[in-house]
Length: 187
Image (cartoon, rainbow, N blue to C red; front, side):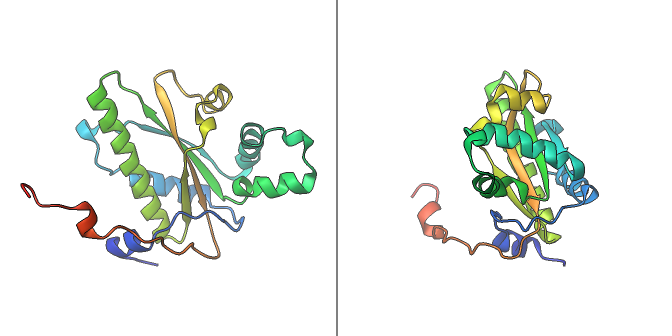
């Protein structure tokens, strides 16, 4: 399926309900490699990505269960399985880290560059019929989570990025009209 850039931008949606089909590791790696052409000041490419596919997904699910579902041990198997679907139905994961420069200007530029990188990945995945969801749960800063990702002291985990196949995309929510966010200089 080939789509134009405009079509990909207008039609891409964050997928919240995946169908459980695994996404091949090579497809994820190709998307992440192509996404590296995102604009980034000074060609710093300040991102680092930890990928979980195939047999590594079980370890990710365990970690997410421990961090995201309080008192999961007290839940029935059925309730736990239902709550875990938001994690277990994704077909692959990419956890995105950014180097935190001590200089504010560079830190902001780097965060913007990683955001562009992730948008590229979303559009590239969409073109292949793979959905994504960029999540920023509170546990990204949890020491146990950082340790699992081998995050360095000067790195910030900024995204839990899910890849997966889906049966239905969520309809688009309305956007602001152009006149609501663009004004002419000097007006």
